[in-house]
Amino acid sequence: MYAITPVHSTVAFSVRYGMVTNVRGIFTAFEGILKLDGGCPSRSEAYLSVQACSVGTGYPERDVHVAGPDFLDAATFPLMSFRSYGVRHAGDDRFRMSGHLLIKGIERPVHVDLGFSAGRRDTGRHNGVGFTGRATLQRSDWGLGGNRALATGGVLISDKVRLTFDIRAVRLDQ
View (cartoon, rainbow, N blue to C red):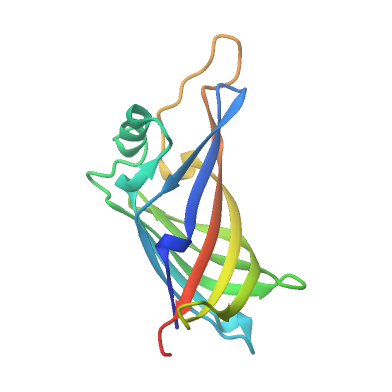
């Protein structure tokens, strides 16, 4: 069993804005547990919980808007979570984890493409592992609104959101 170390991990997103650029953000408050089975990766499990109000995009007014009722509605739904239900090997050090993502009380299936990046003892003598991951989802599937059409065509905020993860976890039973 491994615990995700938030100080060495990142849970981030990016979304196309104004049909021109990407807005990026991170969540700063999260925790998670990994149950890894190196001999049979399909028996591995993951759980991640993220505090919706911990969103940071580098612009405080936008952060308040994203955490507000138009998007995450953190006051009503303070936690977002992911819990896996399956893992399959995708070649070399790559895996595809399937799970349920809960946002704003709506739970939908999501597939996360993972790369195993490290498994070693750190300077604090903790056995740890590292993963990178990515997933793409549609905001509308979770009721994340706040969009409007542009006069020049297209929409202000894309429905497609890219999630990225850089995860470091340490073994609990050392």
